[in-house]
Each structure stands twice: as structure tokens, then as C-alpha cells.
Image (cartoon, rainbow, N blue to C red):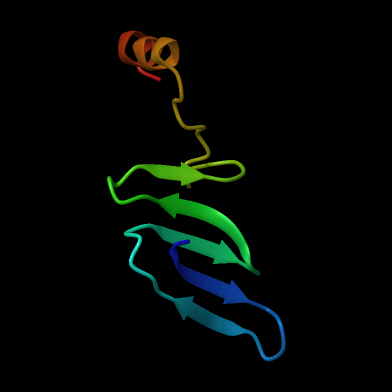
Length: 72
């Protein structure tokens, strides 16, 4: 289990939070986990990750190397 922060639209809507002692945090939307942060500060994102500048995140070693060489 994990401590959760959940934004819900059920009923009047609002914020629901719950805690436990796992050291893991989940951020949810309508009860569905969107972001998980484990006790080692590793982050997992469910779905697509985009930035406000419209660029996609670099996800592989090859893409990182290309970005360094060509300024991606």
C-alpha cells in the first residue's frame, strides 16, 4: 500500500488523502494512480509525460546522447 493524495470529482469533489508507513507516495486522479514515488525517490508516471514547452521527455540512452550532441 502507499500514502495517497487523490483529487476526486465524486460527490462534491475535492481532495482525499490517506497515509501508511510504506514510505511510498501515490498521486491519483479520480482514484487512478498517475504518479508513484517510492521510498528511494524513484518516480513512475502512468500515461504520457509532457512538458509545458511541448517537448517530449528523453527516455533512452541513445536519445540522451543525441540530445547532447545535437542540442535536443
